[in-house]
Image (cartoon, rainbow, N blue to C red; front, side, top):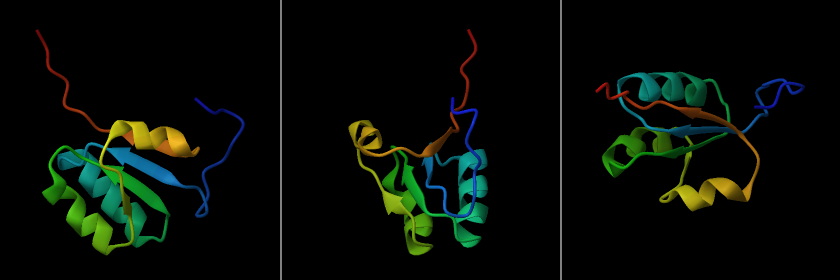
Length: 79
């Protein structure tokens, strides 16, 4: 976690998981002009964000190439 940094409109954002919550948050931020990188196991879920200018990442290893703020939106599975 980066505590001494501020998220601005120039901050690069990353979203992993574009389900119900992640897709809505990512869509609003992309529409507001935030540069963004997205990934979801279901490639169909990335198409709308790509149309808004988001860059797509196919595998998790690509996330390590540059610093960014990252949001993970996964469904928790309870025992």
